[in-house]
Structures are given as structure tokens and as C-alpha cells.
Image 1 (tube, rainbow, N blue to C red):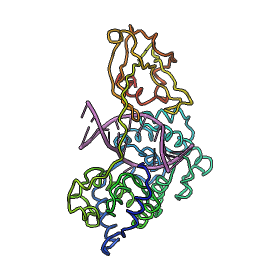
Image 2 (spheres, rainbow, N blue to C red; image 1 turned 90 degrees about the vertical axis):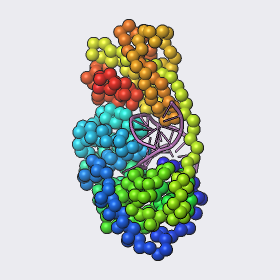
Image 3 (tube, rainbow, N blue to C red; image 1 turned 45 degrees about the horizontal axis):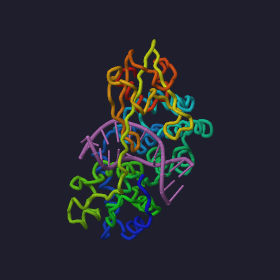
Image 4 (cartoon, rainbow, N blue to C red; image 1 turned 60 degrees about the vertical axis):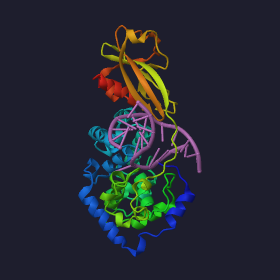
Length: 358
DNA sequence: AACCCGTGGGA
DNA sequence: TTCCCAAGGGT
């Protein structure tokens, strides 16, 4: 989520009534819903009203792109088809299904949430946003999303997409320093089509994801451009429509060497410290920040690029019987059969997949 | 309130 | 290649 800067947002959202010039709010809702009905992407979580599946998609989609979620979503549901199976699973198993998605605390909270629902709610999701927000990993956005999509509760969502769409509709300030203020939520709630709250919320997000995108919006395809304050005031000058962004920190570049050691159907893995802030308790290949002696000739297998938060790694994987593995940190020999049940880091998963091990 | 948490893909 | 991230939540 973007950084909050309430003064700016209050001014920009409160000063201008919507819709402008006495246009019909109902017409705005109809135009957006009609566009959504015809142009929305067909995604697995839009083919169901099952709150379990809606919930899972919302958690996976937090700060994560649709493309990255699709495969994990399918496999996760295969392994944990309902709230009971998820609640009964071990945390390690749940994390193993989450491997590669990042933000692993989401998976731990997802698991805890499932156990809470199984124990305290008879295995059924509480069907309103007030109760949902009390559950682990469910904040205001996610509670409103589940309640509106799965239970038709007329409550609006505000995520990064909605934030941007509202900003442009109101058309006062262009800033990416913005914004989840009470005024934003209030405006979203005023716009909400209470007849179809789930579809309306998804339509706002879909508009932000596919048309009213960051950078250069595709205004020619926008179903609500005649309600848009930005396109009106800018007189169609495309370059001025972009959102300003706060400066980002320059990436840190690091090199890493890790050992792919195989022996009799076992692989050597190391568990990260339980108290680590980054990916605590997860398993990975033995690694070193220092180049082992003569690694190029001895055992170099492949080089990977991998980024974690703001650090870009160049990873040299050593994989050879002749490799000198004595320089590697000690690990534990794990049966290859059981690796799929183990919570492994995204980098380790990527390397093992490249080798066909998993 | 500001900061932290992962990743792969598109421009 | 480099830069931008993407359907937030917890602390």
C-alpha cells in the first residue's frame, strides 16, 4: 500500500463533489457495471461464491500480481479444498504450498484464520464484514471484499486500484503519496452500487488494473471517462495524467553461491533461524556470500537472478559430485520425496524446479 | 505512523 | 538491462 499522506488526500477528495455537474450517479454505476459484465477477465475466483475460495484469492492477491497467483491458487485448492482440510494441516505443509508467493506471514495467518473458523465458527465463515475483520490476516479491505463478493453485503473496498481510480475521477491532485483516508472510504461507499456490491467492487478494481492503470491510463477504453475529472481538466494531454510516484531506493546488488548437493535420493538443506525476520524457519540450499575457491572450474552449474525486496542477487549454483562442499554451511540431508512438503524459499524452489527435482 | 515483509513479470 | 511494481496487514 502506498504511503499515507492525509492532508493532501483530504483536500483532493473532499473539495470536489462527485459526480460533477449534477450528472447521475446511477448512470455512472450502470456504465461501470455494464463494462465489467462484458470486459472483465475470467479468473478462477470469479467463478464461485464459496467464501473459502474468495478468501483464499484475496489473501494471495495482497500485494501480488494475478499472474503469480493463478498457479498457486490452483495447487493450493487441490491440496486444501476446504476450510477443514486447511485447518487440519500442519503449518509446514501450508507454507510449502505457499512457497514462491512471498510474504509468508500471510500463509501463517491464513492457517491460523482457518483454525479459528473451524473451532469458533463451526467451520463456516462469519457472513459479515464486522466479524471478518476480527480474524487473522483480514483487514478492512479484505473483510469488505469477502463480505461483498461472497455475501452481497453493501460495503465498499478501497485498495490501490480503487484509490487511484477515485483520485483520477475526482481529478484534483495527482499524487502517489496517497491516501487511504476516511474520506476515500466514504467516497467509495457513496459510489457503491448496493444492488451488486461484489461486482461493483470488482469492477472498480478491474478498471484500475486494466484501464485506469498507473502511468499512462487507457482513457479511450474507459467506460466512465465522461465522469472523469482528470481527463476533463487536462484536456486530453496524456503526459499529464500519470500519477506521481515517491522516489524509490536504489537496488542493492549482491552475489551469492549455493550448493545443490544430492546423495542417495537426499538433498542437503538448511533451515533459516526461527527468529529471522525474513522467511523465518524456511528451508533453503546451503549458501555463502563469499566465492568458494576455484568454484568456476570445480562445480559451477548455472547462474540465476533473484530479487528479494530491494536486493538483487546474482546466484551461482554449484552442482557437481566433484564440488568442494566443505566451504558450505552444514545442513540436513532431506529425502527428495519429502521436499514438496517442506516450506522452502522462493529462490530454492526456483533452483529445484530448474533442475527438475520438484 | 512509519516500516517491514517476497517475488516474477512487463514496460 | 533497468525500473516499476501488485486485490494489504501487522506492529
